[in-house]
Image 1 (cartoon, rainbow, N blue to C red):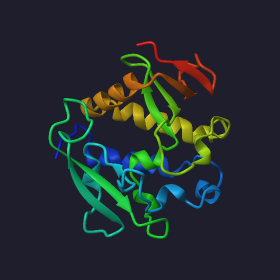
Image 2: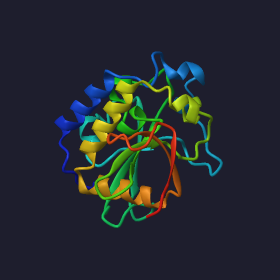
Image 3: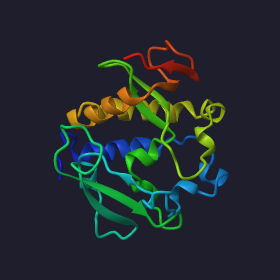
Length: 201
């Protein structure tokens, strides 16, 4: 498994921080029937789920049956060159099986995503992934209604995660591929929420 500079205790602290905030004042799964937690097949027959970040597996018990685990080789997937080895892909059995206190980082921080507008210029953007379901929170107008505590906590977590070289390389690679992003949070307050930022790098 690829190594991480982020310790298990740090991941636990991030989980606790994100446990205290929520995108909305109510369970956003009520808007869509918890679509992101459903076991659906994508058009290319890939199972829906997500990859754990480097080192995030250290705080999960693989014997706990609420997650199905799969190992992928970084050589077979589109990861930065610095990623050499195996990564974990996890899938939950649906909202009725979800252990909310153990949801992975990228589940907790959705619909936001980290974007580097420069070497140390982190902003939070509206997630631009192609999804096999419709999420109301990916609508720019809805995203602007996200709770500010959630947005700030998400930024704090990703700022810390970027101290790991592997995670930095991943976020940088993703950022370079984007043509334009919808900014949701900029700590320097250069862009208003909802600002469409063109990627000129």
